[in-house]
Image (cartoon, rainbow, N blue to C red; front, side, top):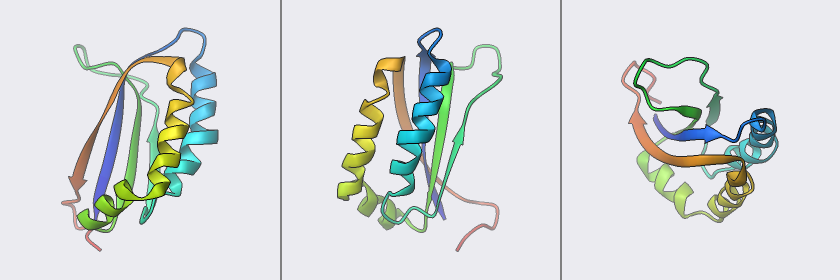
Amino acid sequence: MYTRSAVFEGKIHPGREEEFYAAVRERLLPAWQQMLHATAVRLYRPVQRDDGAPSAFLVQEIDYPSLEAIEAALQSPRREAARQAHESVMHLYDGRHYHFIYKRLDGGER
């Protein structure tokens, strides 16, 4: 199994935190769940961080059965829907996001 993760780093505009997380649940989560070949989607709202760690305000994980499945998902029209959903919340924060692709090592291979 492979997981493609997005880390959202920066800061949500003060007083807009709950609006942001509600929009993530209502707009982004459904779009991410519809990604081609996605088998699971998890979202995390960081509550603590180590001193000196980047200020992340959202971490997303989407599981896929293979690297080829990830590539197909990224080329799928469903990706455009996810991009549009993301663009609809960008005005609520300052920062950036970036991705990692992980291969599960703890026996979770399918």
